[in-house]
Image (tube, rainbow, N blue to C red; front, side):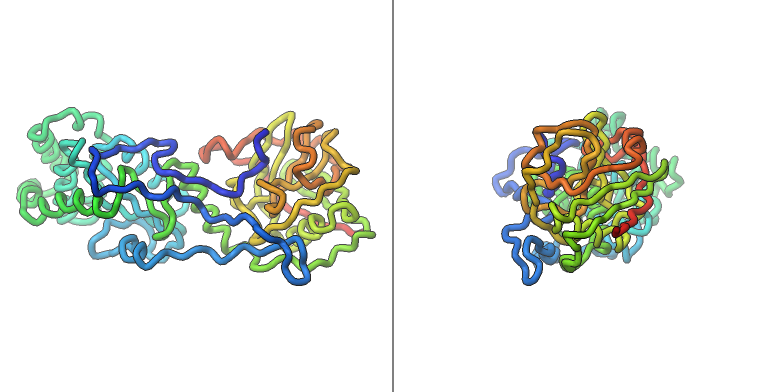
Length: 417
């Protein structure tokens, strides 16, 4: 049975989009499989708050990665604001079909997050398998000498028409690209001179050699904030943006233990379609109810989506990133009670990827789910408005980022009785 939500987002190169791979080179080694560093807890006993541990500090790039993967305005082609918190560096080959898709995805990301994202384009022409990879680099670099806009215009034209010119001979490509430069309004005499100049030819050839020296095993290769290696499908790229943005909202410590196990608590959950009411179980799951109340009272749930709604199974929310990978900055233990099992609809439980990985995501059952027994904390039950939950729009964030918006959770209000 699939766990409700994994905490580790694995972003292996080549994943959904595939990759263009050069002919084997002895000096190229396989990079380690990268992950987003959403931690799993190893021991949960912190001071006066047993059962909870804050996230460790985010990882930082090594000096070696900073030296290579820090954007250089003097030599890099860059789109997006200089102070953007998230930088994607793309190494690509104009003749690689997967690079065409990756560039489209990155452009879509830039349009969706104009204040948060910048894109850095670097060349890795796979000369061992693509006969026009290096000539294409010469072309865009020659265009770039006539202005940054000219570089990006020809960059886009090459990817948009890749299926056409990829079938040409090198000589046919060179004639075609001059015509393309003319259509874009470039000075073609200057373009042709620059295209075949020693400086531009050397730059293009060096890009192939330098990429191999870095250990790049293919294209597209995407680096995020000089730290993470990202699979370049739109779902993964979007997840990186949302999770990095979420760091600004995350708490730096576990919530104080203030819940009264003998008190009665209710949560009124307002959605765009109406409200439903949850009776909370502090006597059975005090750690979970304490965290839920803390997050609600601090606005964590305000304005988020039901990112996973599977009719007949569960509706899931609690992640402001909307990706299904976010947590509040701390993790805590599962609280299992023999008094409660997943035997009916309307039960409210914590999502996790293991006994000590509960955060902020919770789900509501649509039916009995005995496979979940013993693995997830049941901490409440809907007592009013289950019809609102039944009518939530089906959606699964696991299936991709290009999904219609999920139904909105407006706020959660706690009532102590």
